[in-house]
Structures are given as structure tokens and as C-alpha cells.
Image (cartoon, rainbow, N blue to C red; front, side, top):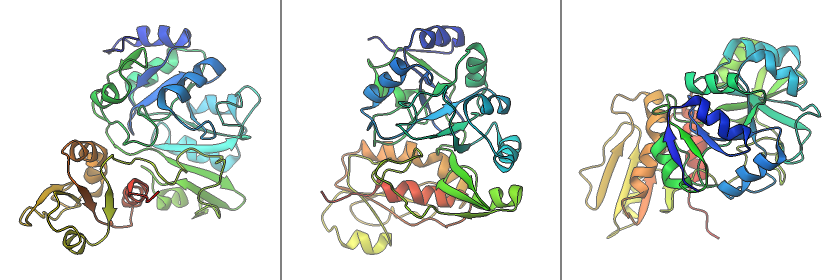
Amino acid sequence: MFTETGVDVKKAAEFLRKNELVAIPTETVYGLAGNALSETAVAKIYAAKNRPAFNPLILHVSGVDQIEQYATADPQSMQIARTLMPGPITLLLPKKFTVPDITTAGSGKVAIRVPDHPLTLELLKELDFPLAAPSANPSGYISPTTAAHVQEGLNGKIAYILDGGPANIGLESTICEVSGNQILLHRAGGVSAEALTAITGLEVVLPETKQPHAPHSPGQLKSHYAPHTPLFRGNIEQLINHYPGKKIGVISFSKSYANQPQVSSYVLSPTGNLAEAANRLFATLREVDAQAFDVILTEVFPEEGIGSAINDRLDRAQFLHK
């Protein structure tokens, strides 16, 4: 299959109506989109990404008013939606029968959001169905934040890449679920736990089971967002001493390690801005992964705001011994 890149929303819509796949830009990362109500299209998403069939997908809709077409929403969830959508927030809700089981990987819950990107919102308004759209990359690898990243990973596997420029946020959406008098945080992202509490007055907690065998929510796999080069986290200066004679790539928040022998240093935000660091994280991971280092080293970021999401992604990008 020839994969075309362009900015033609109507062409993208035509491919989607034919059950073909289109990469779409969002404020978080690029998504691999197909008709969420078509089992044929959703099966193509799993195949193109080589994504485990038990890992559910996120529905993307054009507006908050569409949420209750596909899910049953409680008042607090709708309060979150009306306050934060379009934006980097995904709600996990009981699904309606209109959503096929393949889209939710058999779960009775569906993850749903309104993306904040003008091209994708225009595309969604052209369609009479929602889009299922996980990140537009081979499963487990670093998420794409540009059209070129999508081309690198999925060229020849999808019909069209809708090029909306670099992602503004650069990390996936926060996934949350209102449960009784609490909010379960299934995935940290562009919206902080503090913001959710401020909107609803509810305490935000982590689910008791971080990684169920068959997750109800996307973004729960232990190994994810991972480069091909082994990545380790901790105190960078101590870690450097563990790898004498090795070619090392260091990804840090604001401090440079360029004065260390055998080290190439990549600083995400010289001014110590977490939003800037988050925006540059995935692109930098891809850049470093392409340099043939023996190891990649990184640190624990401040556990505040979007720093929690950065730590989440780097934790799951770490090298796991088989």
C-alpha cells in the first residue's frame, strides 16, 4: 500500500469511509484512526500496529454532546468533559451497544475524548462515525509527535497521513474514571490530578490493580513507549559509572552532562519547564534511539503536574530483562 501524506481532510474522510486507516494529528500525539464502529477497520488498526488484541482503543468524537451516543456518562464525568474538552483528557465510561466489543477489547467500558486539533476536529465533523485512534506507531515503540514519525513506523501499512504539524503537548491524554466518590487515574497525561480535583472536588487515586491482564483502559501495559536501545532510570552520575567504556546517551530535565567522557547529553528543558520537557520527550527519545548508543540513561523528573506523566512514560520505557 502507498502511504500518502497531506492536509486534505476530505481525502482523509473518504479513506476512512472505505474502512482504510488514516493517521491524524492531535494535541497529544498522532493517532492511527479508523471507523470505531466498523469491526473491519478496527481489526486493521490492531494489525497495522501489531497491537495486542486485549488492549482497548480510545474513541475520538467531535464534541462533548456526542459522548452519550456511545457511553453512559455520570454528572461528574460530564462536568470534566465540559470543562476540559477539547483537550488532553479521556474519560472511561460504561459503553453503549453501538460500540463493538473489538474496539474495547471485550470490556464493558469505553475510553472517549474530544481531541484539540483543528484538522482532526474538521475531519470528525465530516464523518458520521467516531474514530478509534491509538498512537500511530508500532505497538510498544515511542509514540509519534510528527507526521514524519508516523511515516517512519507505518509507511506502506496505512492509506494516508493527515499532517497537522508537531503535536503541541507531546504526551498522551490523561485517562480517568469517576468511581463513586473518587476519580481513578488510569494514565497520567496532559491534565494533572490536581486539575481534576479542582473541577470535581473528588480525590484522585490510582486503581488498585495497575496492570490487569485484560485492561479496561488503554495505556496500561507495563512495557510501552520503549526505544530499541536499553534505557535505564535513576541518578545519572551514578548510572554513568556503571557503564565504563560504553557509548552513552543521557536524556535529562535541565542539567547537561556533556562534560562526561563517552556521554552525549540531551537536555529537554534548559529552563526547567516541565511542559517543554514533555513536548520534547518522545522526539528526543527517537533521536537518541537512532544514534546507536549502547545505553540510554535518564532521571526521575519532578512528580508534579505533567512531570507525573513524563515519569510514567519513562518508567514503562525502561529496559525489562526477559
